[in-house]
Image 1 (tube, helix red, strand yellow):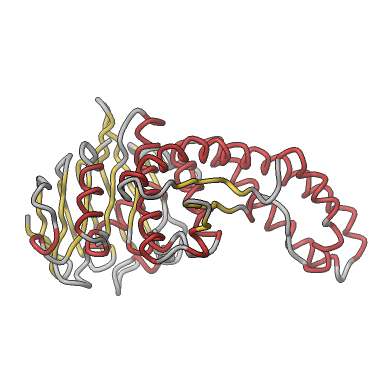
Image 2: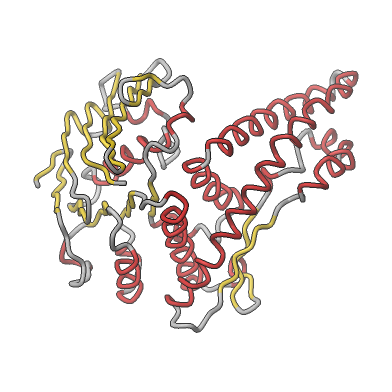
Length: 359
């Protein structure tokens, strides 16, 4: 898969932009706060229907404007998909694929596959479990429509159940309806647990091989899935924790509390790893994600690197650049000659300055 072009109108600091890409290595360079990351954000938007920064849609609209437009053309084999996203300050966004409006934003998943890698991802190991769950969910949603449906239904059920748990304190008779929502959690949560388990089992050997390469064989990395509850025990655990959940007014059991564990030579990297070990582990995880998508989709994702190379030493840069060969890459940096390896063949350089580009 490759991104052919991107068009923006009134998006962030871009009044109007039309940007073609090479199917190989593209570099966006320029000073900080000029709009480089905004371009990557717009591409990410076309893949998952929201910002990687967690920004509200209205915050992506250029100051003083009421609407913004994003358009991209993604090539898969002999087919080209046109993605149109219309952001509105006071209304829900509109999304269309090849001119056909989508009923749900989640229907956009799978049309454009991206792997986004930013300096923030280098700390995913030491951050909380929610960041690691987000890693699993993003990749699975892009490649598995059934997972997306189960996750959406499960999250909705958790929200409804949490609201019910708060109301029970004032209306005790509502406790009788708790089983209805627990049944929903078990139904959809079981699918989530099963698919996450399969995903990590597939990624673990990839990560182990990549991590061994990054550390010259000095560390053996074990990636494991830590479900909050096993599939077959979900219903029982919910019954056992019913009174506790009512007391805390919160759903305390289920895949919304899952985590990932990273162990090297028996040591939990999340807690006891050095900053260097955690960064290397994060890099191994992201590289295994790229390889997993290649195998899963029989195609390479679009790789977005947001100023990541500047955060890595030369050895890690070399390893990363070696492994992304054959993958369309769009990366940002402040200066082309600052740190990019001489072994990297750059196919297109794009200078970004104050919302304007020069190719």
